[in-house]
Length: 67
Ligand SMILES: [Zn+2]
Ligand SMILES: [Zn+2]
Image (tube, rainbow, N blue to C red):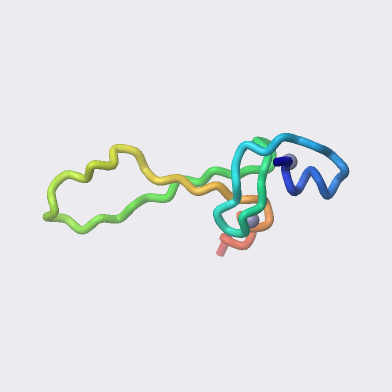
C-alpha cells in the first residue's frame, strides 16, 4: 500500500502507518504520531502498560484535532 497523500501528488511512497481517524495509509513524512495518555483511575494497582498509547494521523485528521 502506498501513502494516500503522496498518491494525490502522483507519488508512490510506501506507507508505513494507517491513520486512526480516516484509515488512509501514510508514509513516514505524512504520518503524525501523537502520544495519547491513558487516564486510569487511582486505586486499581499498577497499570500493566508502561508506555503511553499512540495514535497515527494523516495531516488532514491531525489538523481537525486541533482545537
Ligand atoms: Zn506521503
Ligand atoms: Zn486521517
